[in-house]
Length: 345
Image 1 (tube, one colour):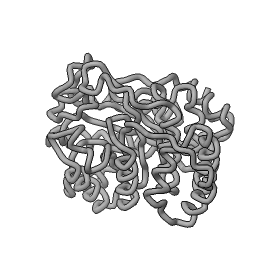
Image 2: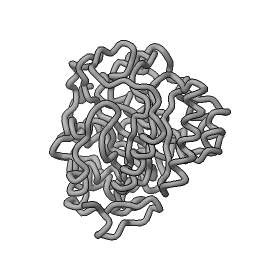
Image 3: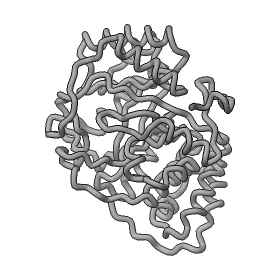
Image 4: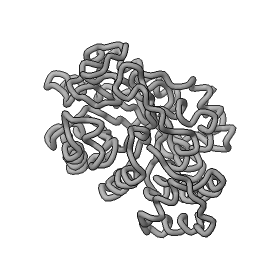
């Protein structure tokens, strides 16, 4: 991914915030200008993005907890993924976890103040026995902990999404990952329309949708814009924004395309194009944003706490301090700010 910073002194970033707050979509030229802006404009861009973020989310930060409930041995060839069939990455592989292990992870998520427990399994789509186990485990988690449950299970049909809704799943994650044009360059075993079909099945079941993407996969500025516009058209509720972790053993292990300022400009663009959506800084924030992680919260209003699928995240205490030091407060499962004495250790 290569952007060419250009001087644009006449571009009024606050006018773009006004446009977003009015519900008007940015033009492609305006969106490109956000991505191609010089570093000297970055603080002004963040201020504009924060105006929009504050309008919808105040100074609250949502926490999500991610559990890789079934790891590896995936028949898909997603080039960025350590669990794919073409990866030689050294990762732990295991079938669907025993229910007691998942319940223990849910307890940890609740202890860490996560409002959403995200349960993920590897694979193209769940086998019938695994799907039945998922449904029963969801019921058990829901009965014990007052958290939202998000399930990420691969490709799903309408009947499966209806069963998930009946079991108590609040939201289903299925990322678009990139634009339709670029999708074939990162995966060949399924296509962009397969992913769109799953999201539409989720919506038909009355579940809220969680869908985002990964940056640093060789995409162009237009690919970044197109994915945002697709998510806007779908009216996706929650948008996880990942930044590539170039894991050794994957085809993309050598990619080093991003720097922290580019990541922040992407976050600003997504806030301006998706003004009311929950934006989550997801996998790769520690690797790609590095010391600028706190600035990401001026555009995004959510993060994962704990580890990712096959890579570790930073310590929970570091995340609590990051949030507090930047002047933000944790949001509880009901959407209200947590009292200071409940914000973490």
